[in-house]
Length: 599
Image (cartoon, rainbow, N blue to C red; front, side):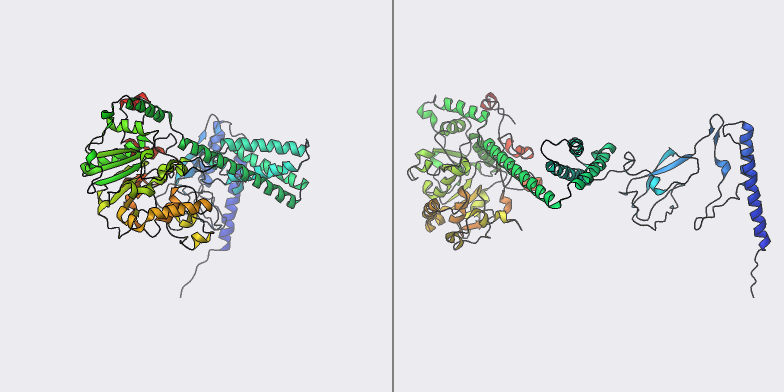
């Protein structure tokens, strides 16, 4: 049998009496002036020491250690010195003031310093910083603590732009309310709206993200909110506001569309305009060419140009520097450069400069042939001008050189295979393997550009499937293949009569709008069901328009293609892709230096 001994009630009453007497004693002997004599301070210390260990915090659920009043150090010159407090700064948690859990309990880890606090939802520890705190002993509510805005120097900044977006929305609504005011109105509300609009516009011109906003900037948001509330009371008609916002949206979209069209036009002008350096180079080489004697204008190894057992490359170009890069890069990467034959066709304007360049810089040990487009007897009469279209100034869509590819069997009657390269490509690997690929009786070997979930690389984007001629003959979801690097089986081409098919579609297309401008759409028609798909690593496109292409993809490609407006020889080119083109030009060349052509 167990007996539980209970302390007598008189013991509790006695203890309570001692505590009350102690408080009264302390209250009587406390000095009225904290900065008085040293005797008063000593008396206070004695009084504190007598009751040390007796005072407890009896608030429920928070039993703490004894408060040792004699632990407070005092300055004899200035009275009581404020005790050193501790503030902890977060280094991992993104929001130290997150109080979404109302039942947070703070537990100090065993290895943490005295005073450490951590919430259950916190992901990390806290840095310790020493600051001065008040000694008045007054209780401070959570709402009295500094906010995140007040502690900009201590707390990590938010990565969102919610405040910036809010200010932009406020600006739109404020301008809409301003339009409701009668013309010439100078009321107090109108003046206030104009002031607030100027303030917000000034802040937005200086801040791009929330972390750029100062405390005064946040105050401007609240000021604008108050002004918009006033405006809403004056103009409470929601339908009028909605109508005004729709009108403003339409006007803004029209402005954006006009700016986009202008930017597109200027980009096309930059892409089609010959740079001053290239014009200078062409003029100097042309002048030099006409000073040569007829026997000096002949290229080397002319006997190889029609041998079918060699690797024949066709390049149709009016840009001699671009053509030089294609030739140089192909020879540099080739395992058997002596078996390579380049067939370059250019227009009559650029023919002398192209000839002079390769006379001065022969691509030994390879062979090169340069022909004038206007002197090719295999082409129909008026071929050079038959592709001019009213209202279209882009040479990519009107150049006869782009349509010359559809006459390859006629231009090279003795050849069985030809690799066609655009002049805006760079060869990075040996391409002789392409002649050994089994194309399974197909005519065109090419890389397809389809990407999963993207309609922009399907046939329906290039052709007019509302016309029954197109709709009944082709699959709108068929993948588009790319020009730029194409292996053509000329024997199969002749067997299927695809040049005749080209002429037929060309005549039909003149009467009906069947495809978009350019040679790519009609090429999709001619070689439909006649194309063998090559591995995508043979030909990577987009270096003239897409800066997101990764380095590994570019450097792993056999051929990289600068299709788009940002050609590598232009100032508007994508900087990170220039290197792959520049390294195949010798910028120490005398003519390049004289014309100020540099990397």
